[in-house]
Image 1 (cartoon, helix red, strand yellow):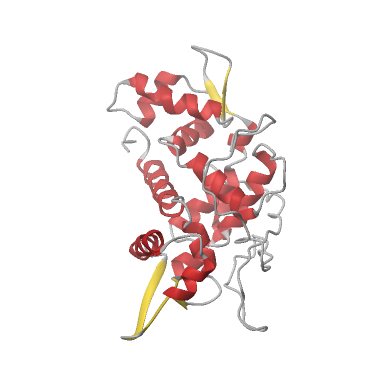
Image 2 (cartoon, rainbow, N blue to C red):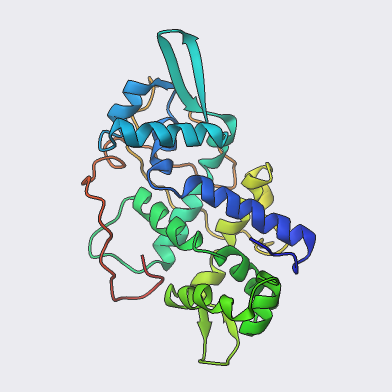
Length: 281
């Protein structure tokens, strides 16, 4: 994605966050990382954790996560191979409650309680739309921007009218507002509320500790907001007394409980759009 009209540091930051989102957004990737967060396990044990995936679906996803540096394959012997999260993959886990907190506050409400993993997946789908991160970044920096100016900054080597499909999608997703054709664009309350999410992703993508997120030059805030709400997964934990993966102190630790994350229907069809408030799921 060409964003060379933006300052080099900003362009690099957006590119890193976009790449990070591209690693974790593909369907089931977060669930696989969560399944491996308790301890390394054999492929057959991992397959049992995500039993709705056939081997032909699971294997390429695990390989992609290994290639991305989030999961590592350890060959103990010819017949004993395990998979586990790398330090990089483990460092990603504290970012997930931040995403859940944003989703609970800003996404449209479902007619039934949603699990944390569903909030995460719905949010990531919105944030990985083409050019979404760059557009939201520019609007956060400039407050109000015309479509032509957005095009010059986000896609300087394309016809400027190409900005409108992704921009209209962000308006439909309720992350961006405008008063009508020819009027400038600005972040909605939901779009502006993405500060903790983008700053946390930026810190993780840059290899910085999560507490550095508050000082992000665009999305950071000198005043810490409320801590993310506890959320649940369903991962089977190791024996009592085994420490959980280290989490940054600024982020409330996840409440890991059994049953919730993977006790879901295996149907993969999209959810119907809901009429009430917030960005669409």
